[in-house]
Amino acid sequence: MSSATDPWGRVDEEGTVYVKTADGERVVGSWQAGAPEEALAYFKRKFDSLATEITLLEQRIKTTDLAPAQASSSIERLRESVVDAAAVGDLDSLVQRLDALGELAGKKREELKVQRDHARGAAKEAKERIVAEAERIAVEETHWKNGGERLRLLVEEWKAAERIDRATETVLWKRLSAARNAFTKRRKAYFSSLEDQRSVAQNEKESLVAEAEAISGSTQWNDTAAAYRALMNRWKNAGRASRESEEELWGRFKAAQDTFFNARKAAFDERDAEFAGNAEVKEKILEEAERLVPIKNLRQTKQSLRSIQEKWEAAGMVPRADRDRLEGRLRKVEDAVRQAEEAEWRRSNPEARARAEATVAQLRTSIEQLETKLAKAQAANNAKGIKDAEEGLTARRAWLEEAERTLAEFSG
Image 1 (cartoon, helix red, strand yellow):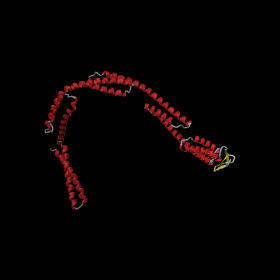
Image 2 (tube, rainbow, N blue to C red):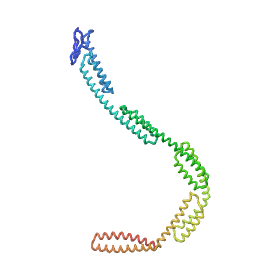
Image 3 (cartoon, rainbow, N blue to C red):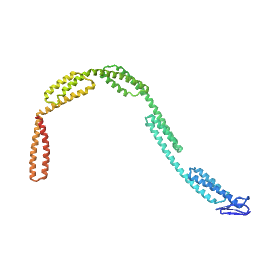
Image 4 (tube, one colour):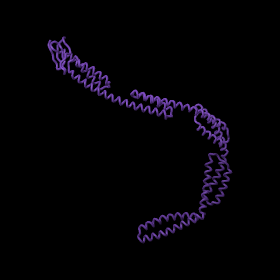
């Protein structure tokens, strides 16, 4: 049998196949069935198969989330296959590639550990936040529906968060459970107390309904309307009974109110119809009163107004809808007469007249003095003196004009 050689192996004349490695040659098999070249080709294909497996593993480690433990296991399995491989090729390069993959897998293992540590730290912070909020709700929350719903969501958040070390997880979960139990107990106590309050409120409102129904037929309109307002204030302060009782009692209370106020409205409407004629009379009285303005003779006007006021009272009451409008028109006439009286008094007040005359005299004297100062300042070419005197004259002349108008009123 002839022999054959290759850069990574050979076949001797007896058909023994060798591979070349850094440690020297070693036998990988025997070939008796054909030419030596076929033997080398066969064992090269085995090498290529190993190389392909390593290439695929490289791709998985570099491009997928292959678990580090699984990657290490695959590397070690291939390493054993390469070391004792019955193949011809650069087996040392395959070992080097596996060594590099081992380093990459180790790096990824460390990165994953850092990520897991970070995730656990974040999960711990999240769970501590969840517990803190649950404990706050257990102590502070009084909106029971919202509080219960929020606690339910906090439990869902807890379940969705990453797990942390068992000891810390257990302690935090116990605190969360205790907070939920505390909230439930506080809520039960509140509703138990609320039932007592509702019972008291129901008794109070039953009493109020009885009072409201007792006076619903009263014709003492003002006093009874005030009584209903007081009953309503007591109703608002009594608290709420149970929903069913509250609706039934309120229906009775409102019905009693409506009975009274509907009767009062009917009575007022009937009375207003009677008062409509009085309103027509007062309209004519107002026409007479409004002709007094503007006032020419105060004495005669006052006498006429007194006569008008007497007729106004004698005319009687008017409908409520007309009352403010009619009384407002008469009040304008009365205000005009009062203002005329005040003006007359001011004109005839001797003390005020004397004060006005004194003010005018004082201002005229001051102006004469300032005019003298101005003349002197002009003669001396004293710019500051001229300016001060002119400013003083301007102010005092304005004051004098006003004072003279006031004085003129006393002789008007």
